[in-house]
Length: 257
Ligand SMILES: [Zn+2]
Image (cartoon, rainbow, N blue to C red; front, top):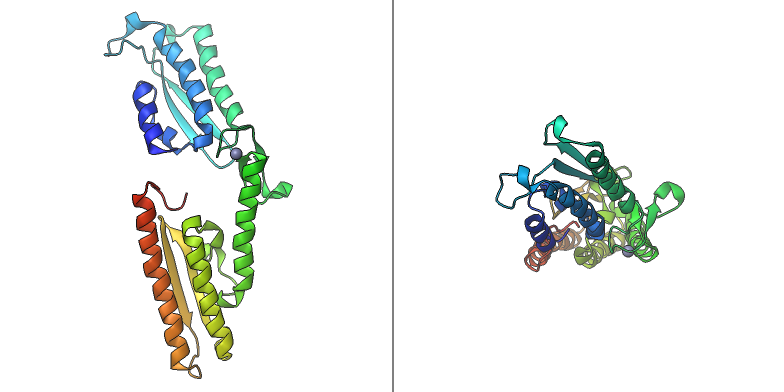
């Protein structure tokens, strides 16, 4: 979620906030707040038991686990077993369960009604998304797949996740497309370079674009063509670093999200 929202919630619910809640996408903030409100009431019941400044009795430690398709909350009781009663225990379990249930039907991007999307069911991406964000994700995927197919002579036959065009964030996608097309043009024009210039790595690692390439048996290639390819790759690397810094300074805390 956005850092400013996380900061605010961590202050408002300081006795319940836990850093794992920061990992939740923006669309799941409403289910989170609903759960925190219920647990806050639980904490508020017996102010007389408390010794902390806000006068709240903190009954549980909450931890959240999140993936693209679900979120779950876990509670560790802090009060002695004898202090709990059935109604309070049930209220706590219900709050956790409603949180997981609401996330499973809420778009993780925008918070509107959503549904589980899985590639196995014919969806383009995995996640809990509304129709609009599902369509948007599908068009992004096609975008990356088209570019991959168009430039596939530049990639080794087997590469696994080392070539990951789907992981390229929007703000770098144009740059990557232009660079790959430029390199492909040089390779095709030069004829003898086909299959001999290979991009062996093109993926986001810790928010930075990593690019590697190899040359094999290029003795017949013109120096001019090789210089052009080197230049295109160097430009891609330096410009992507610049764009990433700019993106992060403008408020994107993680260039891959
Ligand atoms: Zn949505």
